[in-house]
Length: 228
Image 1 (cartoon, rainbow, N blue to C red):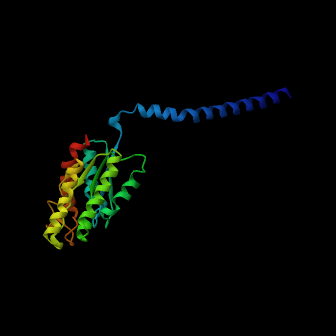
Image 2: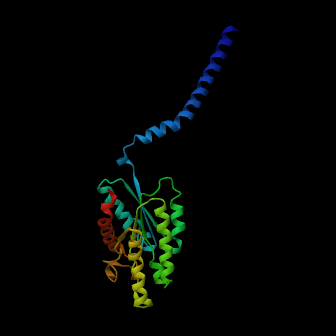
Image 3: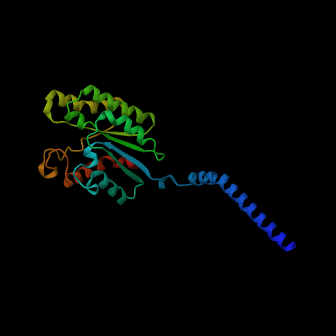
């Protein structure tokens, strides 16, 4: 009888010890994680660069592996840089969607370390009001700057479908905003491929695989100094 009681007592003590150990682990785990995180070398932490754009960035008409953002990631990996490229391109999107999309991206705990905003092509093709486009982009810039995240603004050119004055005024949007906000202005990503049939899809607007290859090289050359 005494032996049976002793066995029961041992089982109770064992369960109690296990219960206490779980409580200790639950209480100490957040602290251990914090200590661990503080001791991770900053160079080993992967940063995010977000390309906020439209179909030109999404990669309309080509495989994901052929998009300029995918090719950028490959170049970054080859140089062993700690950056992850996020393709936030949505076909058909205009500058009016920029602020809402940025707010959504900022919900991620692993926040971007750099935003590249390349929007406005669809606005220009639709002949939308230049001042409205400018305000939309400014609102996006304000939101990103409020979060103290560096910005690269991508220049956008539009064909003279709505007259030379419209296309000239549209082009000025990006130069003026870059100057006003003291941010980096990246040349139009299609500068070297626009109007060249062999580098574009049959629609004459979107780059094909060869076009994306050229875009990736141009963009990488431009952003490379900012990835250090």
